[in-house]
Length: 368
Ligand code: NPG
Image (cartoon, rainbow, N blue to C red):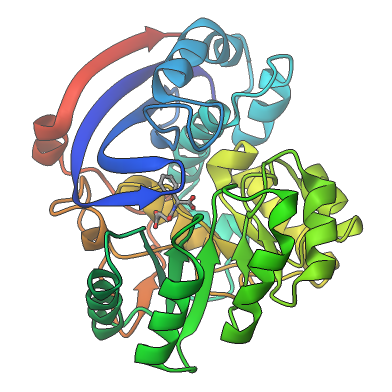
């Protein structure tokens, strides 16, 4: 297989409701999709970088730029292109994991479509459906939060994740526990909003029997998380800090986390995501699949990953209508709190051509 070229497609889709986190509010997704054209087949990649570098240092214009200048030309030079060849070919270029991950996803999709194999089969899925959680943003009031959580529980979501920050942590968690009871699987996500000085404050979450506290401290603060893990009873889960399988192994060895959120874009692709999974399984550390408000394209691949045996906690693999009134693929629908794992070749879904055109802001063809 050789690369013929890559189409960069920028789409803009409004969210059904704004999602507020400690780092900002998302109301519209400006997403970079990649159509990777090879001599054998075409594949789709979705870049999870946000419009602004607020979740991590990556942002969508930066991803498009590095793909155009460096990453696509590096793959164009390969005589034998397959997904395994992508990371070594891109290794000279530092960082930019979300851009690299999107390109590897497109190559893997093309390779698997040509071979008639699904992502699930290739990655080692052990289930044909995955249990789904939902991420609930910071709200203006506790009553509004309780209405929203009640709606998601009625939809069938099997786990609730509350976004937290200073001023929106203990009370919202207490209110959700009081209203919906102790049986609801409940966890919180701080997206790096706290500091080492907040250990005693965060220990006030302990009585609420949370599954985990996700990424309380800054991305680089692994030792801080290790100290915090000794000061609080709730398990610490890392997201932003885990940028590779090596980072996962180190964080686990240092006692910085006992649970890991795996997002393929954050670690540079699905093959590294599987290595993170393998490292965690080897250490007895449970993992779950995070989300970056993906369209059906990225969601399809995430659901396949979430079907691996180490994913023992429900992921942020919500149904399409959690985010989009109309997705760019046939929607992923919740069925008894689960999503079905696609079985068709590659990611197993296709963008709907008319819908894709409707949301497209620009396209650019990068020939090999
Ligand atoms: O379900 O796709 C999803 C989103 C889940 O809350 C979610 N993602 O930090 O994990 C996160 C968070 C997020 C990422 C929110 C990017 C906003 C932007």
